[in-house]
Image (cartoon, rainbow, N blue to C red; front, side, top):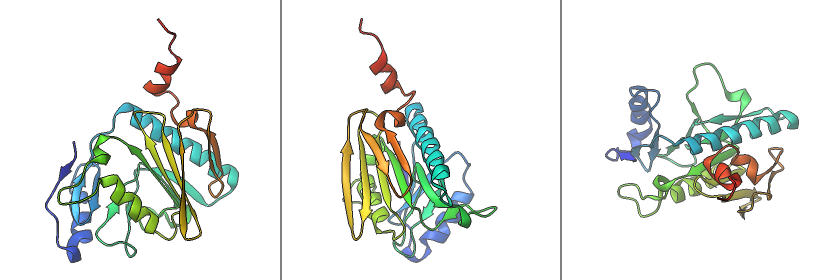
Length: 210
C-alpha cells in the first residue's frame, strides 16, 4: 500500500521533505512526487532478490569497465534543478563515486535508474492524471546525466531497457530469458535470466512437471 500526504507548497517542498524523512524510521522509503510525500510499500522477497541481482551485476560490470561509478540500492535522487518538487528513490541506481562523501543522504543525479515494477507503481498518486511510474520515467529522462532506465517487472519475465541516444530515448522490451541486457556505457552484458536468479519465477520455471 502506498501512503500519501497532502501536497506541500512548491517553494518549501524539498526542504520540508528532507526534514520529514529525517524524522521517520530508516526502514521507511519515502519519495517526493509533484510536491507530495509518498511512502512506498515494503518490497516483497522477489523484488529484493531482483534488486540484489542487478546491484551485483552492475557493480561487477563497472569494476571490469574501470568506471568511477557505483551501483547502489535505494539512493535518494533530488531531481533539481532539472525538475522541481521531485525526489525519487529508484530500486537501483548508478552514481558518480567521486560525489559520495560521508553522511551524504541525497544525490543530485544518476547515470542509470532501475525500477522494479509492482502494482503500486501503476497507481496514480492522489491528484495526478498519470501512473506513478509514468511520471517517474518522464522525469528520469529529463536528467541530463541519465543514460539508462530499466523497468523490471517483478511478477513476470519482462524488462524494458531505455537508452539515451543523443536527444532521443530508444526502448527495447525483453521477455525471453536468453535475451541479453547490453548496456555499453555501463559495461553490462548479461542474460535476462540473471536478473531473475533465485526468484520464485525462476524456481517455478525449473520445477519438474507433475
